Length: 278
Image (tube, rainbow, N blue to C red; front, top):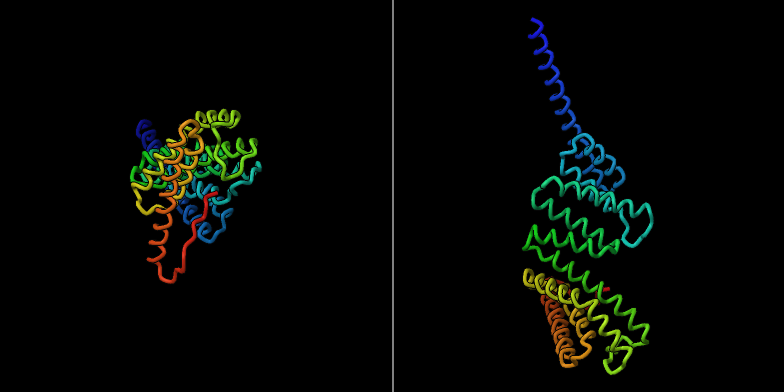
């Protein structure tokens, strides 16, 4: 008799736990829905509160974590290096990382990787950004955007130190490093060693992006810039420098013609301009 009572008690306890879990999941979805509504109305702080509650109620609800990460990222201000702003980025990255750890569907994996990469890029953590753009590319090899982003990062990593060194030498923007000048030749050799791998990777990544999206004019514009990086560190091969500059000019022409073709497909478009990437 006592054994039967114990079994009934255990069964009742199990049912109570299952009921409680079911209620938590329902409440989690309710908080998720409320958060989505707030997010769509640009009420991001309210949305974050709802998403936080949803995640607390059901830690397995991937969509809640995705929305929470996106809401944190929406609050992050690129370029504002303050503790509160950086904390917002870190919280977004933490939630995206949590999604990746749950072996999500491909779309969620790609979006999480891109989200992390974008935040690291704006925090100027370039190596971390490239790591997650590569993860996105591995997850969806037919997406040209991660390849383009890696190319942009590589160009940024090359351009800034090169311009700093040129400024120290007092060179004008249209002046190449001169291998006949001892100081310039030394700087050129050092930059070639430092920037060479990034230049090569950047060219390969941008070419891959264009292969996947033949009218990717932004990638074409950066490929032009990347070949100019390559040209400026051709210290001992002036013929190769000229070839690189010709290739760069070719990509300028392709960029302009692609932009023109796109503009002609849009009624009311008056003309085009080629903005130099910053």
